Image 1 (cartoon, rainbow, N blue to C red):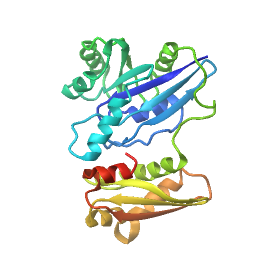
Image 2 (image 1 turned 60 degrees about the vertical axis):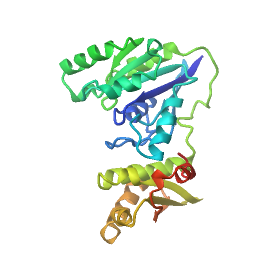
Image 3 (image 1 turned 120 degrees about the vertical axis):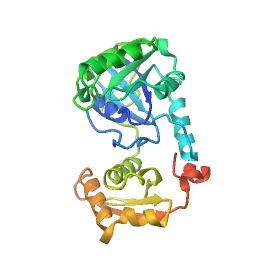
Image 4 (image 1 turned 90 degrees about the vertical axis):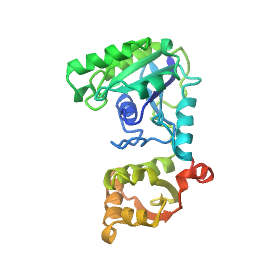
Length: 279
């Protein structure tokens, strides 16, 4: 039996969470087209007859301007330590730039893999151009994939499996994530908020479960200003109702999900608030 840990790092919005979900074969991390959706380390677990791979999905590395930004950057950078394989994920739809180079500078590239994601969205010539640019990094190997369509995923998983050392199962073979159920539900609500609310709002939103007495779950949505509270609730409660409907559709039948909105002024700029919310 082989087993080990694989960390995925990269700029925001390169598709790390979608890639982890694709490799695990089911939804582990929330996904959004908004950058910096992932804020904490999320472990997705793939167990096959030959191996167990534990994927570590990390927040996108970026230039931080808030206490929250500093915390998520530290989380991502710390995740490259004490793992068996590190993968740098880059976006095939965007030029290989200084941001990718900055992330690469924090990695031991001769022992890392480079994954060029979203190849379904560009022409083959663009993929080749990205591979040529990334090739200058001197990484151990390169894989063009599409987490969305699944192209290249089986080959990537097979290669990662071959790199795992011999070892025991770290998790029971039916486990797909190490996230507590409460955190999963809170993140599920935040995912739907990202999909429904305005572009300027997502970074100011946090969610947490405050009560759990199955089938009743209460989720608190934290925003930074009263004006944002109105945006989350929507006219006549329309936005909140839509978010609740979308989230409940992914929860077990019979779940009673209550959503409440709370203002915590400038929470993402205050280290004590950031820590209290679990980041």
